[in-house]
Image (cartoon, rainbow, N blue to C red; front, side, top):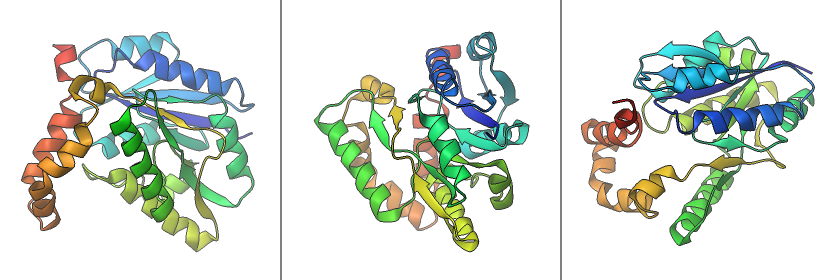
Length: 247
């Protein structure tokens, strides 16, 4: 079995990094190849690095304010033949690495994503879940956990380095590359990404649906080339979200 490197981007994630790593370790026990865990410590001022290293993960320092660049830093440091990425507040199910290894070994797939399931549900979270399922089904641009051979990520230039929608853009890039080689971009069938609800816990379950309606003009201006409002919103929601933890 080919060796696997699991990349975890982390910005002040001391509350979540241990459970993420433990989910990977549980999946690694069901996989016969070697598995390394790399935590990319992005501007961390808390105990993320110490916790990760205490659980046997390698850590890589990073100062970027772009999640794609953070993931690419982890890929650059990886030793495994297969790359898997997962966000630090999320978890993978026990058969994830085994299924990834099997799908790539068939030679039919260039890589893929994973179905997303929230760690708890409510009406707005069911609506978010439905939107994700429909968009993935219609576009085929599966996200969540990303997986492909390291040589594939190198061939496509890694993750598309943009602040928003980098996941869909990267999936599109992988899908197009696979088409040239006669391989499909796909989705795990037996395993899922367990998606954190922490932002919903902090700011309410209607968070993202409210943001879509409240910032409709911001999205339109961004589509027309003025991204200042969108970048400010992204900084607050993602790149600055955990800053208070390390203070």
